[in-house]
Length: 369
Image 1 (spheres, rainbow, N blue to C red):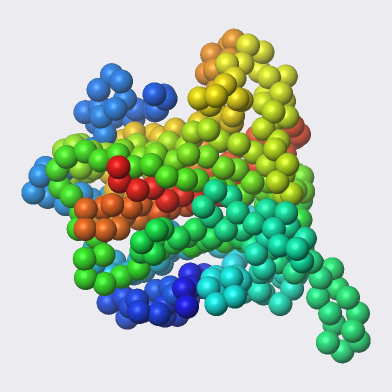
Image 2: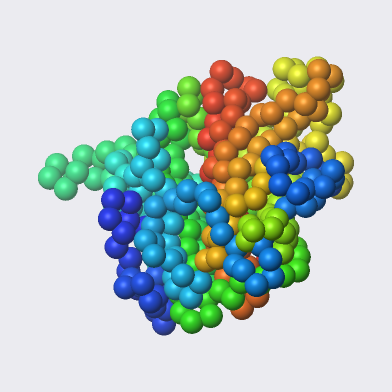
């Protein structure tokens, strides 16, 4: 049975069928960018790693999880607890036998078993976001003593697994708090010899999908975001063993909790607040959310294939460029030639439709092209 598991206070992983790690635990069944130094060129496309004989090394802080990672073992990372409610979800497990999700430690989410959305019996019209599955908590539960029906909060979970089954992610959030509310995320690489053979030379391009959940501080509500994810890695530069990485999310669209497209409404609010807005558009000319862009700098990746990089979104207005959001993503490589990369992105910014701020937590899986 495929599973994705995260313990927030104490890492306790449950085993997936046929997959074991060697760290004592068993894992689960064209855009602009900011240049912060190094030997990057004027077009912002240089980013980098070390010399061809030295593995890359990162100076970034990784999320909690596997204490002594290596390229060959399973690695699990999960959201740290914070004062906004992040990181409270524990034991996040996908059950392939009945296509359900289990999440522990979140109050008012029913019996902790989330059902797939988009089903006849579901309250959630959204069952998938691209290749990723969406699950919902129970809308109510029953008092076992009196039989009284108790209303619950609307939690949503997004689960993604790569085509190889080697990497996975899960995100849980609710929009039923005035603040960001409680939730969590987890991502992982399943272990075994050859889990990752990291290149030390050459460049690589990756592409795939992105899907996320937006919640708000200062307003209730939950929204979905989708997009196209791409990444480029220069395994040979920067020098001194620090690989260059660029990550983008383009063609981003916004949806409400029932799947209705909100992109045009969002762009109209941006235009009202930003005269002369250069509206971002996809290849078909449709308005889309601003692209997620990377902060290109050395030291974002390490020899175990883990990546932590700062990102932001920006618009062009009559008064010049304006940044809308900023944050980081966390990712992990897998495969004999780092063929796939899976991760989770978290950004925060001001919502142009209200006085609220948003937190967007999205997962992505990209494949080497």
